[in-house]
Image 1 (cartoon, one colour):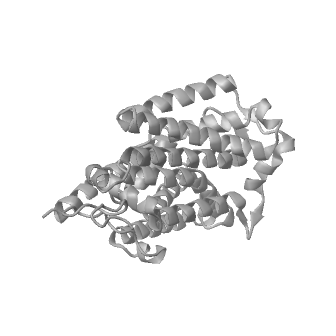
Image 2 (cartoon, one colour):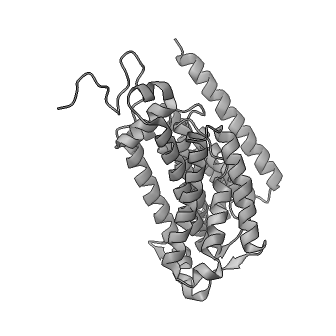
Image 3 (cartoon, rainbow, N blue to C red):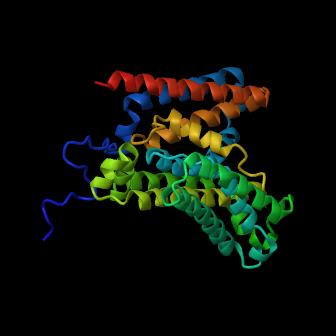
Length: 341
């Protein structure tokens, strides 16, 4: 029999504020206050697209293009959501994805076929994320510094391995490319992969002890430690999970571009982190949802699509995204002040 005086691993100590409970189901999550605003923003962007470029925006090919672009960054966003809810930050996701794509498309790796290529991408991504986790959890490095170092190192290693050249996927390994070309009900397979990752991420965050501990660690690490949670190990696993998502995203971008390149994922960390913040996840950790992050991602993807369709300057697009991030953070701070006793 367990000792009733011993605190449970998934509960907070007496006198502490327990972490926020996840939404009971996805539909309930959609109608929460912050998510209503996100849905309204998406609706407004759709209206802008229908007004400015009705013939180009409201087409099946454009919708598929939006979903395909969202799929690659979206898988990374799922991992970033876990890390930020857990009180961390990961600046290296784009570089890790590039490294995984390069490693998986080397001649030596391609000789073993598409399955080994996919496994290689996942292992490289997970391994790099694990290094981040070890440096942060056990090496006591600040997440910003550790992941910034990984960003530089992973991008440099990818450039060295590829000799700064784009590596094409050989015809014998076309099974990976078919993730982008094969469609079910008019939608590419890579979108279904994205949907599966989102579903698994939602279940992991909302229906498992791992998810509850993630909220606890992000909300109050000391209280989580006193409750019996191994905070350092959990932090390490969060970054490994982020790396795993980068490996899966590498497979998707290889399918879309038929290449592995050290330039893949440039500024993806910006879009992923911004999507998570806009989706309502606190930068300080302890609160956030997968659904909110995906809605935030759709907002950014729609903005990118509208800028492209209207022939607007890429630099203006970045300025707009930067302003959105600032507004989202200011709104977060305002909400926290209003909730403070």
